[in-house]
Image (cartoon, rainbow, N blue to C red; front, side):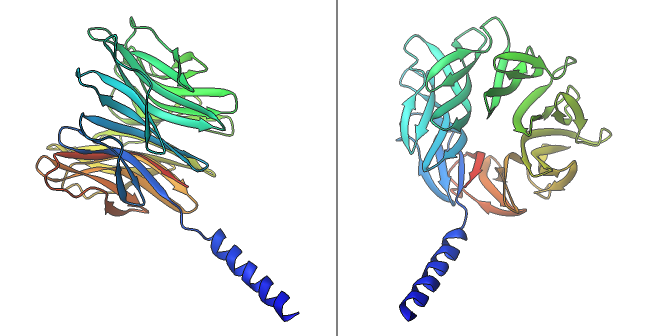
Amino acid sequence: MRKTFFLIVTLLVVAFFTGCKSPVVYVAGYDGPLYGDAMLWKNGVEQYLTDKTFRSQAHSVFVAGKDVYVVGEGENEKGIWNAKLWKNGKEQNLTNGADGTYATARSIFVVKNDVYVAGEMGRKGQYLSAVLWKNGVVQYLADSTERVEVNSIFVAGNDVYVAGTKDAFAAIWKNGIVQLLADTGISRANSVYVKRNDVYVAGRNHNEEAMLWKNGVAQNLSDRTKHKTYANSVFISDKDVYVAGNENIGLGITVAKLWKNGLAQNLTDGSKPASAESVFVFGKDVFVVGCEEEKSGNWVAKLWKNGIVQNLSNRTSYIYASASSVFVK
């Protein structure tokens, strides 16, 4: 009886601590001179994704099960940029640049065994084509006669959403069919998130004001009478809507910002230029990543957890470092 009692207690203790595991924070970005080296940070510990022979960048990270996926681009020996996918640190080229095609991978989403990557590709002197790779097979969202860019992908059920721009207007593609979110001036869609059949898109309008579109209906996140603002990332947690971005307050200074249900919070004090690029909510914790200029010309990748900042890069010899995407598991 006593052995059974101690066995039960032991199992309960193990179950308790197993259930209370700390989340793992994955951040993708780059760190090095001239936007040089694709990086993955795991709980603040850096990992280079290339051997640093050629320049590279990482734009998006996604974790599915035990697998960690990162996408971005890397330069080859001919100076041509190839779209790249890293799975658990192992590099795969989505394009090879052999025919002179330039390409970049901007965003990734994984569902079961299917890997979706949104990006752009095209020949020098042409407009880049918006493309979607599913398990490495490319699908064109627009041809080289159209001015397009894609920034974000989200898969909900059987539907694939891609946010970006078409002919300088904020746009979203659903299963390859494009819808313009704005048709005046220059606008941009930077991030898409789908929850309970509602489609949220973060970006900016033609007046350079941070915008949130819900099912195509626009909401201005900024005070129209003040400064230029930019919305870079959107995340939905329960009924709360989080948007990360920045505000240009003049004299070359941008403030990193987080909006929760339309209410703004400054992540930086405005003494130095900064930007918030990606937001992820895990339980009650809000994670935001981006960058801030520590001294003239030296940018440092940053992680804010519930508004408390942590440096991800701190080498003073590096000219530029930025965190582009965060995923918490």
